[in-house]
Length: 479
Image (tube, rainbow, N blue to C red):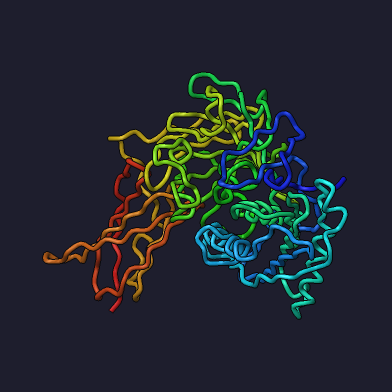
């Protein structure tokens, strides 16, 4: 059964009733649009690579935005629509996607206008959801401007026809049926084009002190996810959606395959951006973890729960992305404080997974994760050193190496690695190089060109406020 994702426009169509009593309206997004649970139009477009749950959309994609006006007049504002979509305005769809993809996806194209015939009868009778009409009118607009719609990757067709908006999921065609007061509707509908469905939220989960148990016995409601522009928020898309679209690479995202400590970097900045934990044989199929700090898009106060804790989503990423946010503060009567704060624990008893947030800071969060029903590893204790990172190369006793010398090893995934080295002579000064281990716990540092001789190096790892003991290694630079 095909369903249409709608965003109603109250100032065009008076009001918009939500079809599901459990649906939670989103917070104010400085727009006149409100969500409707009649979802996106599902497409059966297969994944590009069978068995790999990603649908990459990267590079430069051409978009045609057609503004179609009726002969008897309407309310569409082409300059404003252009500003909302393909302009360089910081809040446009183009700028938003550039930020969400971290430069991996660029939207280019043009906005055209076209005056069609008189307003059709179906646009005089309430809320007709006319995607086919918008698509056919968009084709007319393109041809009248000497363009072929088939030469564009994405089409947005805007007509004045009762309000609302809809999109194929995944797909390339979006219909908007009125004048939006902000760019939010385009970000929302483009998310559907990328394959993102409306999300949900687990609320009222069982709680024992700082431990929250999910998803068993939780209540599921629609929307409520203020960290997702297709699920009730006005922010950049979640980390696992970005991975699905090919905007995070293997160094930034990993599936956790062993219990241990993990360090999450700030989403959109350096270091690992996303950890996923398999819930083998279960639905949802994974748990996704991310950590945010305020940006112009994630416009939360610095003290807000959502930028001081770890965001958790239960997700299934197949032909589309289906997320269920965890409300990790079930003791409150709202979903605007969902992130797990330091000290809070998630126990997924069915999947045998435990997630404990150890610490958070301006540059990341440290989490202790146990899988397969294992005991959760302890969080780092300030004052007690971590174990030193491993050094794989240069190996002990390795022969002299020509420049450049590369150190590589393993550590806590996402840990800060500091390598100090000095030449074995009385007057030599120490030099320091730093890096961040990737999401799999691999780190690599290539040293600048060094003079021939023997050097002494020491490597430590840091996770939040905790540092490790030093792992020493002698190495020699060849003559």
